[in-house]
Amino acid sequence: ADYKGWIKPFKSGLFGTNALFENRKALKQLLKQGVPLGLGSLLADAEWTVLTFFASALGPAEVAAWAILASIWDIFYKVTTGISDAGEMRVAHYFGRDEPELARLAGYKALLLSMSVASLVSILFFFLQNSIPKWFTVDETLQGMLREVVPYVGVGNLTMQFGMTSWSLIGAQGKYKVATWISAICDWGISVPLAAFFCFGMGYDLQGLTAAVVIGYVVTGAALSYVLLGTNWDKVTEKIRDTNAATTNDDNDDVVLTGGDGNEEAKAAAALKDDKAENATYAALCGRRSEAARAVATGNVRLVTLPAWVSAGFLLQ
Image (cartoon, rainbow, N blue to C red; front, top):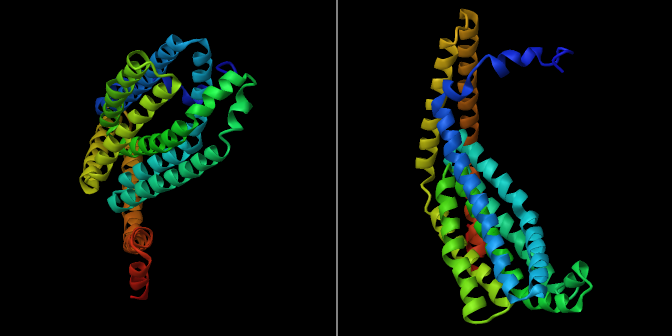
């Protein structure tokens, strides 16, 4: 690639700058968000590994059934993870645009949509509970074990999706550290100890192991929803705006100090000015739509939560 000259237009950016130290505030923010994410992923994988060791103590058939069950659970997770990720990006987008009301509305819509899809998946799973084990194994012993834990998996799917969507929306606020600590404490402080107690203390089979995981998901979802529903969206928006402004200012200072000529400085200033003008225009347009969006959201909540005769009264108004 270098011989062909393909890298030549990008050499100055790849090798002529030292981004790790030119904008230390941006690097600090990157590590602040990235380290908890990596730690959370490591702890989640370690939890399932420990639970597999517990299953191995029950017998070889239980280990095989637990491995199949983990695959089924992973399928459930993948079904709605796209909704959670999309909601996370939309909420972060509105935070960056200084629109806390739209960020809140997008977050709650993502939570409602993910739970609706998760409910449909669980209902379908209950209808196919006798057929699903046959899709993964022909061993009748394993099929019987899987049928016993199907109700737990159906309920656990709902609690898992609620907790994971709440985790993503909290992360969009820049609170990955809080969300990761809550998940880690619930997993290692509730699920793992309960699984050990059910397997070794009470002598339960895979039903006890699965029940421990579901209980952990319930507590995790409750704790994350408490954080999410108690969010001060205006304050979070202000904090994100200040953080972005600080990192952007440092980056602009670094551009000046690295020896750019006057034309480059003028272009950077003009680009920054155009970006501010675009943000102001977008905010003005969104401001006009926010009242209508808030009215529609309020009406939808009333239709869903209030009795029919009360909702009809609001509609007549």
